[in-house]
Amino acid sequence: MAQRQAIVLDSRIESVDQAEATAERVAASAGFDESERHRIAMAVREITVNAVMHGNAYDRGKKVTIEFQLSPDELVVKISDQGTGFDMEVVADPLAPENLLRASGRGIFLARAFMDQVDVQPSSAGTSVLLIKHRQPPLPTPPPHK
Amino acid sequence: MIKVTCRRIDSVTVVDLGGRITLGEGATVLRDAIRELLAKGDNRILLNLGDVTYIDSSGLGELVSGFSLVRKSGGDLKLLHLTRKVHDLLQITKLYTVFDVQDDEARAIAAFDTPAGASGAH
Image (cartoon, rainbow over the protein chains, first blue to last red):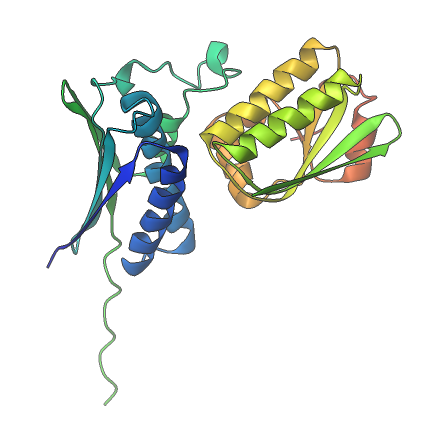
């Protein structure tokens, strides 16, 4: 059975820490190991940074909504802002030699590196980003000793 | 919260960093520390990241900006004692190819007097 949780955050830097901490807790409750929890939490952090800075542009009247949905197969995190539709696909490749020394542009790249699937859905009402992490199948239960 | 302390060994300033280098205070403190050193003419900088628990993309950006500033001043900036998570982050982003990463402080200090590419780092 799926479990859902949602938080609504103000468009300020402190919200990014709150998003990261919540993601860490949800990932822990889902049974992800320490390394995967770190990666999931960082992906959520980076996308929330984009939502606060580029999507909502620190507008105090706009919110960032983060929805966590946990099913037996995967953890899905949807991060939505209320901006004008920042298109993350146009961000330059941070691994290109000419971009290696750029100070920014690595957030969406890191999210893609750390999650199994990242879908960006820009619209005039804001941008939503879906982050998906597959759960490891449980180890088979050994047969009972006779 | 980030902690920064500086100490001088020969002509190199070792900057011991601890805590989180992230968007906001952490990245700002690192930026200010590097700029203050450059303003004093100290442009041989070894960043000791051994106690850094977390770096996000903004923290990486500050490392890169600091590196570029120091190089423009004719100096050099090297990294020391990466944790596994920071090491992985630098590999994923290919920044491992940009920075001279060291794991021994004495050798790192000596490497400032070694021509680039001859230190055997990485």
